Image 1 (cartoon, rainbow, N blue to C red):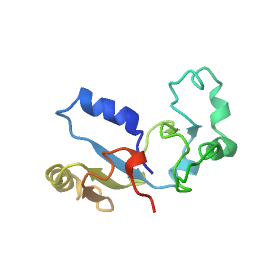
Image 2: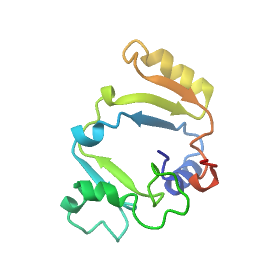
Image 3: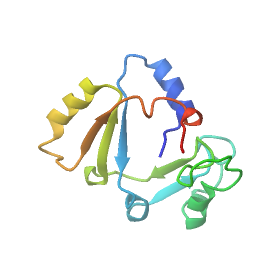
Length: 138
């Protein structure tokens, strides 16, 4: 549970005036919706020309965690750019939390949406804005 920090870092530099939010999804989305499990960046030449059916199996999900782990926690994919793509619409009922960089943005969105989505919790801080490699996971 950590974003693709390489891509995020570039996008944050490209759009410094934008607010970012991380949506935390219920795990059930993985078996209730069609998903593609990419062990690396889906746009990379390694996988982009492969048949999508290769990335829909339980083995494809397991492959996110294969290879040299270098002390990573079991729940982190081996490649920081690994992706799970949910095909189609992700309904709000799958969202259980939103994580914002700023308290102001978190409060604003919470006030605007709480009556529609009372089960979503709102958080803020820098926890997901850095690099996965710099986090002490112990």
